[in-house]
Image (cartoon, rainbow, N blue to C red; front, side, top):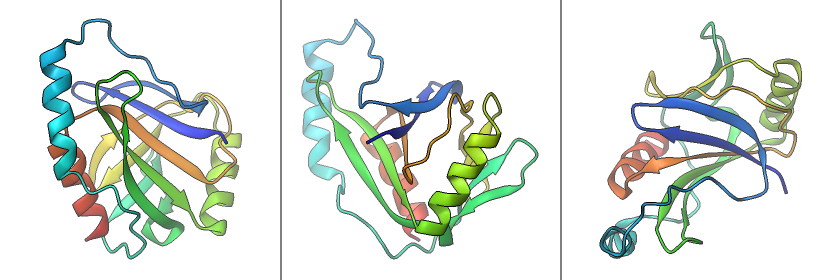
Length: 158
C-alpha cells in the first residue's frame, strides 16, 4: 500500500510529498538517552483510530482553495514508527471514498505543486506533490514530539 509521506523538519521546512513504502529518512546522530526518553513518551500517546471528527482540518492548494476537509476524512490516528529504536510520530489520515477520489484527482493533476495541510487555520505542513497518491491514505511524518502530535490530534478530533 502506498502512503502519502509528508516529512517535516523543524519550523515546517518542506521536504517532499510522495508515495512511499514505509521508510523515512533518519538522522545518524540519535543517541541512547533520546531513544529511552522517546520510548517512555509513548505511554501518553493515544494511538487509537478516531472516526468522529469535528475539528477543522483541511488540505489546501497553494492559493488556499480547500481540496479535502474534515467531511472527506474517514479516520485519523497517531502512528508510532519505531523501526530504528527511536520513536517517530506520524498522523495517518484515511479518506472517505469521495475524499480519496478528490485527493487522487488533485495529486494527479498537481505534481510539483504545494499542498498545505491546516488544522484550525494553522499550516502544519506544506509538502510538494512528487507523484499521484491514489490509495486514499495520507501520512504526515516528521520530527513531532509526543506532545505536538497529541495536540494536533486533539484539534482534529475536536
